[in-house]
Amino acid sequence: MILVLILLILVTACTVATLPPASSKDFKSLIEPPEMTFATFADARKWIAVNITYKMPDPYVWQTPKTTMELKTGMCVDRSLALLWYADLFGYTTLLRVVKLDNGLYHAICVINGIEIDAQIYSTSKPEYASWCYDLTLDECLERCYYKYHARNTWEVLDECGKNN
Image (cartoon, rainbow, N blue to C red):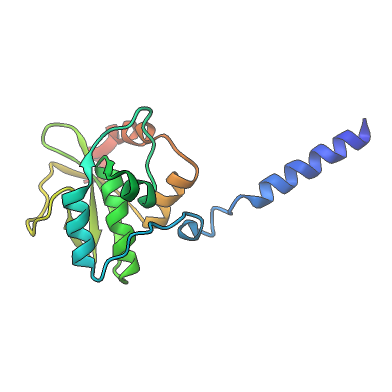
């Protein structure tokens, strides 16, 4: 009985030790990268806007950039994560910004080198929205992909969106 307890403790300790520590924030190295390459960031941006179609999977979880590029489908957050991945590869600073639209729905856009970009459209116009909710770094987004957090929980939390303006 004592041997079983000791083995259980060791297995638990080993399992916990294999999870990346929250403070490391190195989830990019844990996520398999997309296979597609682009000569420029502009090429990546145009390809994502033109070739990835809107589709909400059921059940919905955030897709990795690799999955989005392979399936060529995803929601706004999936397109944004793919675009942020490539922006990061080209050396840009990146954030995922969650905003509330005039119709009350939430939307994910990119902030690349301080400029807001909607990954769903290939346009130079600034995305329009009613209020800003919160920003996530690329690693924070990839952490959600790595642990398969259910995205609906994230969107539901945004009922407090107006408090962050």
